[in-house]
Length: 306
Length: 315
Image (cartoon, rainbow over all chains, first blue to last red; front, side, top):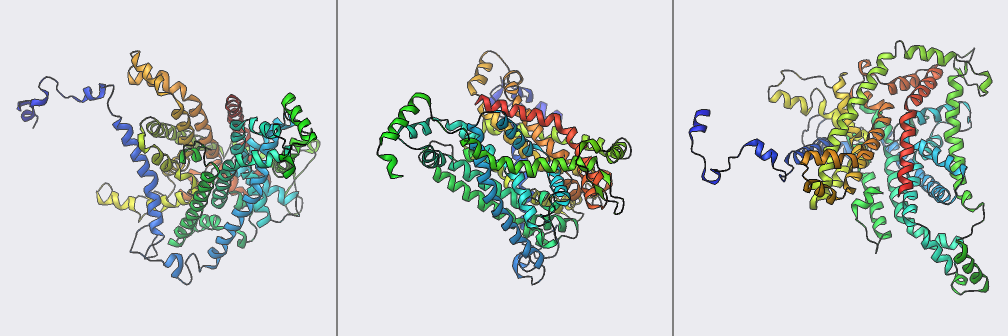
């Protein structure tokens, strides 16, 4: 084998420049083949399992590891075990949406107002408040979940575990997103637009409502989409603050079912969450596009980076 | 609203003042914006953390054997906390050790793999950059549960991974991937958290001016030395941010382990806390474990907060 390779006359194209592996390696302008391979392998590794999980939600059998044909039984048609007809999953689905929407409605205004206030209020209390806010962002979620559980058990006993406690907890965990996103935007906007508005005779409140707020819309929409998506998927804080089983949203049910005996209905539930968050992100993206109309932006990548 | 457009005497006077000394707001004006958020955090963030401390240093209810919080620091007792601390250096020690090992190994894999991917997309993404970026960040809005579920489906005894391994005759009977294997847990951690590594790295790598790299090469640097002496130092803040963002939640993670292993062999710190939560009468131990976790993480957390403040000031 090797004999023959050596005996064969070199091909005409490179009699003078024998192609050897290390030559390709030494070429400083070579294409980054290895990096390219790593990146594509990473993408396959990260996305193929999800595709399979989605496919399994349409499985024709009870198995949730092997596909047997296509059916909608786990979504709809099975009268007992499907996502829509299983009473537990059905109730959980609406609980998820309820928690997601309420949390956005509370956390986003709170976070935006906080960012505005902190951005213009220079003083020691403001620094302390920022520190607290960012601390709530980096603390592992289990710490927050457990401490909220303990406070509702021992100190704020008038708040029972259940929907109210869940919303209070989720808002506490999510409030830092709008704060971080909006403050970053405030720093890039600067003060000149507001000053121009007041120069033209606007009162401070008008300057905020008619000039500053519209400039902040992109950040507000982006953070609302993010908070919604993250709330819908949350199962740590929510689990610790759940009261009766009826207050558990879809994410907690998926977690419990996965550990017990999962059917493809669990995959259907997870896929439903995926569709809901994708919908929220797409909605947020279009709102973002509308709000940044006429400005120079990098489109998707900008939205991703806020 | 209408009045503002026609300059009255008052508005003109105010405009003059603005031109002279910037916008004047009443002193309470901006603090009042932040006030609701501050109150919220005080009641639902600081107070809960204080409750955790009061329970960890509290006493035991003599009748129900449940934890009894003590809110006055001068009456604190070290009963629970001392007991838990004794366990940490006793029966819980292996848990802390392998949590540490898992997190370090998983973060290292996240860093190496994430760096390669972020570097490729930032430098050579070309016209596919937008698409690649969307694919890279898509796991952000895909639920963590969904992503773990996907691997549970694949790694099942009957799942496609085992089927493939048996098909190519690498193994003769299915491997119990989900039966308490550290390898599976580490893979799950990497899979779960690597997007949080890629994004900050991409942010820093994408900002590096290509002309800096070109001049490095023009001055005779090989690709490798240009990377070591230009790219790597410039992306250092991204590396630090990524490593901290990824490893902090890993230390508090219990669900990856519960879902992909569920065996006491791979128990992590988060699992200890979660188990104490599900057992009645373990409130004191749970609170103490939470405090120990926070103490362990306080240095990286403070470092991260400081570095983000500095970047915020720099921009």
